[in-house]
Image 1 (tube, rainbow, N blue to C red):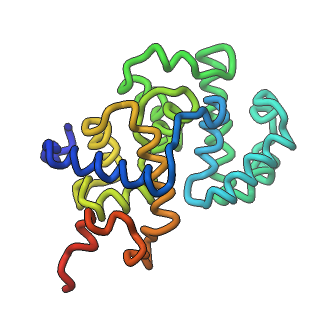
Image 2 (image 1 turned 135 degrees about the vertical axis):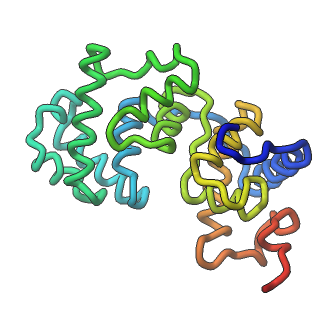
Length: 230
């Protein structure tokens, strides 16, 4: 790790694996599946920034209805593009970001495709994606994992919260540091199911404001639950 965090030890790994086993027993297996084509995943993840999955999904569906091809999106007047994605919020910011990303992909690749990232080392692929305006570490990891099947560990608000509460990620780590932490800690084949299961757990039980600790199958493993009351 280059973040200044102390590296995880064997005890942390074993705890993380036990958490995974409990999550599988609770929610079931989560085999890998591609969510969208990589460019679709990129645009959808940009739309998902600072909004809910429901709103970003609506914005993406409307975008593709109004502009069926990426050529159409690139050629769209910015104000009209912003109107098409308004359901996702921050439309005046996201519309130019989407067009700039598509323009760079087309200019460098001659087509709207990101498969070339599979030929790069992981850090180079991440650097290429984060070089796009408005694309941070989480968006890049989502594109790589969900769109291309490249092992990367995305950290959204649920993963950031749950893993630090459990004590399998450092308490003061940033989302980017947690991502690097788990990429160093876990076998690559667990990145996808671990990410998906932790998100489900965060949505259903380990909520931000009122965690349902009394119902949680992970309470015995959880630093947050086991900590003495202040």
